[in-house]
Length: 308
Ligand code: CLF
Ligand code: SF4
Image (cartoon, rainbow, N blue to C red; front, side):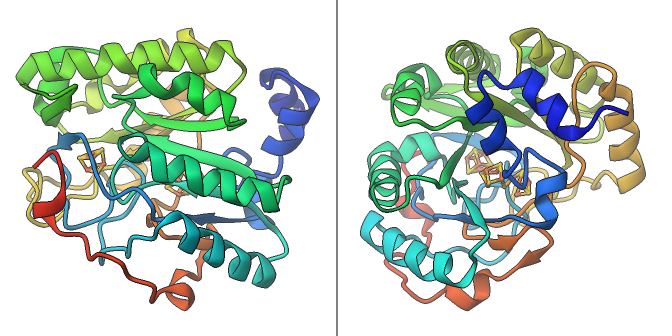
């Protein structure tokens, strides 16, 4: 059977990116036992509203709804990075996965990355986004040297998307229904193309919601394959209390695995995702974030979130 590193080499644009990816605990199954990642909770604002989200919690596109993360500024992120790096010599990746959207908070995100890059050029950076602002910031992400970006794409059809997204706020305008869903999807498409064309390895997260988009997921995966993404990560919906979907059943492991098996023929499937927190730290299977909390600037407050 083909070894994982050979598969990565085939997809990555260069040997350097392949070697980085082999140390990325989410992009490489083999790496997740050995290499740690840390998330910088530097992105509190979100610009869309997913029906499975309650903004009192972290972004559900990458996280399990739980207690709210603290939010740090870039200097605090650097201080926290220094501390964590000392404790985890195998820390390979610094990611930004909320608690809102990485690109809706671009200035602090960029500054945090630059501060850490200056001190630790070997660190791999990773961003997670809903993709709405990818056409605006795709080139800036590339210029910053980020090679790993996750985009959550739950639908490639505006009628399906309209059941998942309550609204989208873009360039000062508020969109709902199919208009919101088609705008989001158009921007995701444009943004993913920009990234893939310039050698960024794009991972697609798909939240599987029973009766809403589960039947549609194979079509999403096929479209993402066409765009040249690296892998898809089909994740079960975890209904956040207080969200529109709070009473929806959560897909069980067998259903999610069956969907991954179905889509495996099209594209590589991530199967070791832990739906971790916006301030997660450590090996995927052994989160140590509780040891590093305490520098709180603002508790997440829905009144402070731009899109609500
Ligand atoms: Fe973080 Fe996400 Fe980067 Fe990984 S998490 S920004 S790609 S470094 Fe990983 Fe966590 Fe799953 Fe995300 S296990 S929720 S896939
Ligand atoms: Fe919530 Fe925004 Fe993440 Fe959707 S993209 S789950 S609305 S934080």
